Image 1 (cartoon, rainbow, N blue to C red):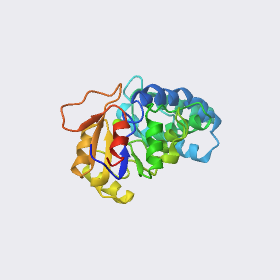
Image 2 (cartoon, rainbow, N blue to C red):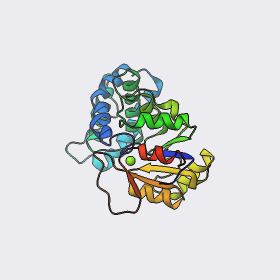
Image 3 (tube, rainbow, N blue to C red):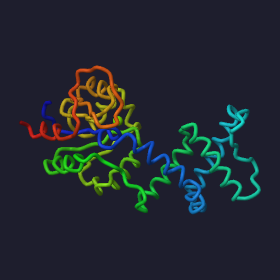
Length: 253
Ligand SMILES: [Mg+2]
């Protein structure tokens, strides 16, 4: 491993178990959706999301209305209670299919935010992560996050980990608004925003295509092998099981 001037980290499979999303976050949103909508029904932003869900439900009805288990949202619900209940049931139908409509994603984000804020949700990070962050922070090494989860979701996650608030060590967050993680240009854009050349960045990820894209951009790409990560094909990248070897390489030795 070569030394570097800035660190860029993937989240799932690198700092946090991939299982967190499917075993904790999604079930949490599903369990708390009804309660959340009832308690926040008068929030104008929540109601905007609800209107969006109603629109998207109409669009989905065009392709799915024939399916026996499809749950529509009624056109003229007789009461707010009926509207709310049918929106919840419709969103459960969407979640069963792992759909990613804008309305569903926005409401899920709100449910997670309230879960984190109320202390009911904590994000796991691997044991070596807080110490690595602390060392980079002390050495003034820019530390950036790049995940397909939104920047807001990344901030929430690192503010509310099982090991406390880690955001003090993080200098920047990037999501797919910067560009797709499997395209080299995205890494050039991130390098520019950090203010270093791509060759000065070490990028750690569990995804081989992401590593290749970063490598194409000139970054030093390292593969993260954490427990529970999927098997990946043959490659020539260096692999690490924790962030410690990356921390050590950064000492410039
Ligand atoms: Mg990953």
